Image 1 (cartoon, helix red, strand yellow):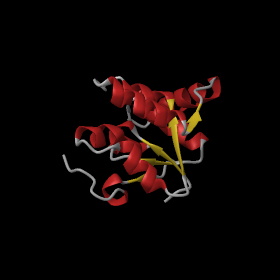
Image 2 (image 1 turned 90 degrees about the vertical axis):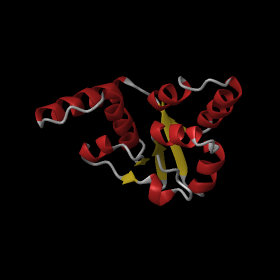
Image 3 (image 1 turned 45 degrees about the vertical axis):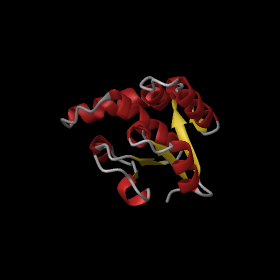
Length: 138
């Protein structure tokens, strides 16, 4: 496992849909490493939560993670990477590109099963099915 890991929103969402507490599961999994997040992940995860108690618990958890601020430099790198990928015929969702750029800025791997990240050069992907014991199958 990498020392720093960005947990993609799809991991949080799948755990929540299967009634698995992401705070407990991810906190135990990371061990001595550090979890990283960014604003886009927070928006993607928190917007779909219907129960305030769960949203509040997850928001508190996200508050203590390393946060990559979405600076002008991050936006510029996101635009540049999106442009380069588009020229190669890889039209990826901009939120995935932003998350990848944020992960790169933090020197972090990305825990995700979103195939879009395979198209982004320089990103180390960690497969939740291999990393997280009891990963729920869809």
